Image (cartoon, rainbow, N blue to C red):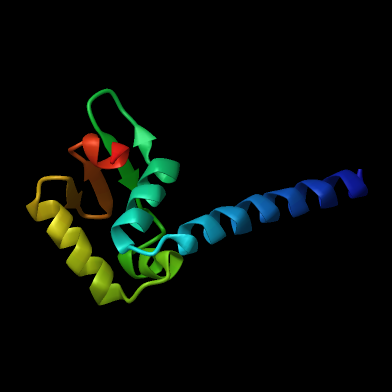
Length: 101
């Protein structure tokens, strides 16, 4: 039982580190945001939403490996182009074609 739990813990850590490496391998911030939305967003009937909850935008910036102000600027740009909408700690994806580019 102990060995099984250790293997499960190591495999989860491996998956987490692999996804982190994939995200950091992206050169552009917009590509990192897109990958983050693809992997973490919850699908609803009309929109895709990402409840940040415990992860604030500063935590999201650390996760994406960028400066907080850079992330805010990019999220604002995406919001101005009508791709996303941020309300409190939820990011709503308004344009699905953004994820397909």
